[in-house]
Length: 560
Image (cartoon, rainbow, N blue to C red; front, side, top):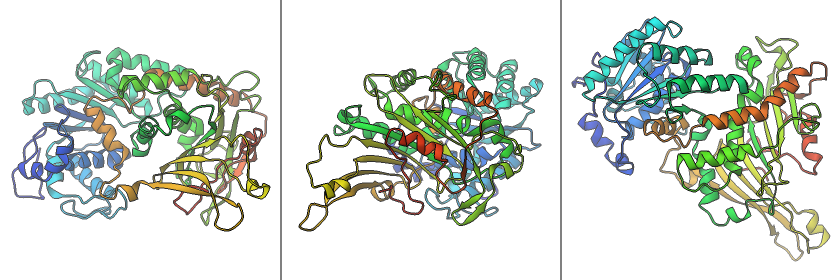
């Protein structure tokens, strides 16, 4: 490992401990979490890719800055690029500086980040410590023989560390096409010797394309790793506001007693995206909204919102309750399935205007089939057949080219059994609603009725509003990958998806996808870019006398 040119002081080799000046600057942060993860080596497959550059290296830097990396620790980048250690470090330095707001080519040392919320100053000492832990192995991921190079590099790094058997985390930040070849290569080269070892594997979504492919991938992973060694990552679960769902529900006695069919009319979970294809039309043609968003993000949000209280705040107990909840979901087959369209809606966006900019329609996007029936929007009415939620519908929707980017969970309560106020006041009545804004402008609001000033009884809906930025001004809301990487290093799988919940989510959604695939003649519903979806999605709600929420485009507070 070559020395950094950013400082004259001597640096230690890969898997080194923190220099004294770095440790000193991190002392206050580290005191919050004094138990560091075990000594670890993080192997980044796809090291030249976008995810490593934009998310993983900045997350590692943040952990290093906050004194939360293992000691000793090493990073081994793996890709097909003809790089050496020095080139890998330089590429990651540029990527870190860009991610932290410094632009494309500025120097990392001492530059002040200006990238908005969450950006931090790229400090020379922290970067030099992280850089000193980095090395690189060139490897053709489809060529089993080339994994010998990776094994040699890992043996070298571990030997230099003085740690006999560190945790080795294999992060698959690559296309799903490489998942099985990488596992094959790790086994064939002897890097991984079978289930029960010190290795862990991190798998990014999508985890399969349907129930059968997900089952095959699970089966292959479990021949090399125990379930406890497999970390299926869903970055949504690392968001502070998503984790706060459990705290809100189970840490506040005012909410849990009313979190059931007796008080709640329905729940809406929305993940809206303002962007369109952005050059990814070819990928989206193979995916669509259900595979891209519902099978992972929305199913996990549903499980966290509706699950029973866990026996303990532990990975096993929480994941058990999520699995039980998914088992309770009413299947999407039979006369009320995709053929009957009473519980599911799909649509494609057409040309329109999004925030003042003209937008192409989906069929006009590059690399999209002119006869495509791939959904860019989907809405589902989910029924939960258990004691707590019987009769309470959960409405899930996600789409591209919506008016704004927003993710939220909205819990609408029943109307009072009888309104005793004058008719004019009753006409203005709106039901109580608890809204959890996950992104952007993370917040929680509670809508309730109040009397407007004046001699008459005039009701007006008002809000109690909790804003994360305002409440925790001295604390940054770190990117989700920061906490997910930290938890993986520490062996905490709470925020990762277990194999059985992946299977259950696919089993629920497979009939939806197969029903749509079989329907090649029905007109494809459409919605104009910049709108909140097709009329068919509105009908999904109005059949029960309900309406979708319309989050405001510019106002950071939830809709009134």
